[in-house]
Length: 182
Length: 177
Ligand code: HEM
Image (cartoon, rainbow over the protein chains, first blue to last red):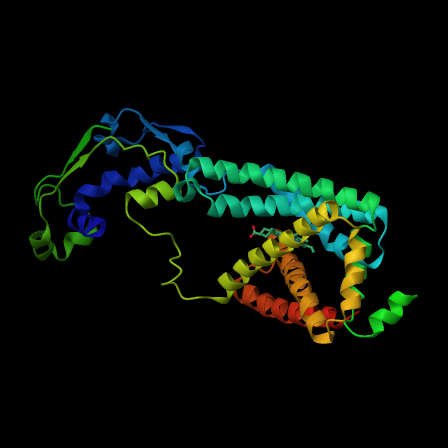
């Protein structure tokens, strides 16, 4: 529609050439943007009548589903990178330090991971504003208690690494009994 | 901005060169149009969901309409495997504190049951596949986060490579004891 409008009125539209200059400001600015027509754009004689336009670009922020978590992002990635080494290391060389490091890194990682899932699926519009808050609160409880439980397990029992190795040593055959008889 | 762009009728301002050649024919197509500029309506402060609900637009991509693609499938599988691994870790923690005997006792019991090599392989695969997939696809994610392998071609190539490596990895791991 806009195109046909342009085609029909090319002679009169020269003044509009200055408009992109105005719109550009909106994109550049962060929050409340003052759209002021520059003095030297005489061709915009009509547009000069437009006084000042406030465009609240900040309101757009709410469109993001998961909100702003730019600061945590870097930590998330560092933890993921650490897990890349911690997962095999804990399995290959189980010891108390690795067990606990794995517990902390893993719980942090899955907490943020599951938080993203909860935010995506247990949305206020889907489950209601109260349930969506409860879901997040519940996740905090689960993550915190899991971290506590894992550290307790590492301190009082065989620990995560040995538990995994133990489980992996199962063959399901008679060989198991010979090994465990020792 | 309360501003009216009055566009005069045909013939009032014949300017640009574009029209020179075909003036008359062009002019027949020109109609007087009145454009009225009104104050910009500020965006409603509503979320993506709220907006969708208001204008009756379904969630995008509409899964029963949209064609399944490798990219989307690998992505949701990363999430699914992440959830599965989380469930395992949470279960490990909770059972460690709530079971009556130390955890290694129950592993010992499982050994004594001799459930057979096949079921043990399956059991290990249930752990190994999510871990292997999430591990290798996690590498892919982290590489993307450093702005690498982001072209469509590379996304597909690394996708197939990751799928192969993580599947073989899961099978090998599940066969180990
Ligand atoms: C082995 C090393 C691991 C690496 C390198 C890794 C890497 C990653 C990365 C990069 C993401 C973010 C994906 C994205 O950007 O959307 C992620 C998500 C996630 N990870 Fe891991 N991860 C690892 C292990 C684990 C473990 C052991 C668990 C569970 C206990 C886990 C649970 C999750 C969850 C729940 C998510 C969220 C999924 C989503 O939001 O779609 N990860 N992982």
